[in-house]
Length: 125
Image 1 (cartoon, rainbow, N blue to C red):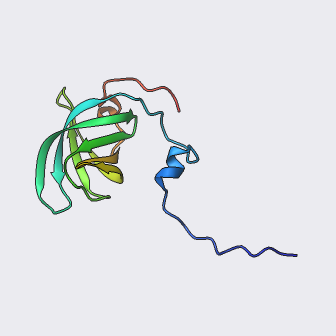
Image 2 (tube, rainbow, N blue to C red):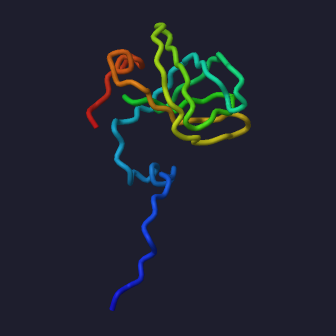
Image 3 (cartoon, rainbow, N blue to C red):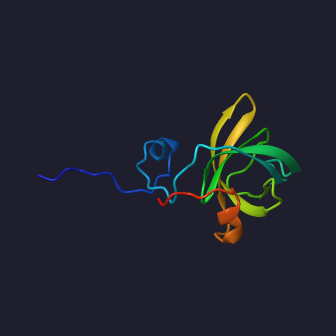
């Protein structure tokens, strides 16, 4: 007797799957915050240059909190307190609470600048 299985389809990665640890992370998240400057274009194509907070830092990116609506897939520029500037892609919107939006971002390059961007060493994944 064969069980009927629905056809396989590629489903988007959900925040619940990520939260539950089902999907393997590339690097360990650190529960640290960093003040950064963000530059880019918001969802309405309006350019911005604002101060923001990065949380849950990791080797490949972070979550950033700001009062702007960004488009998933858009490219932004981050600058840290030491003046190092890197580019990143918005990969997901994590939350939006009372106008404060949190987005998952990943660095576009994996080079010395991005490895040193947060100014901390990360444990091996």
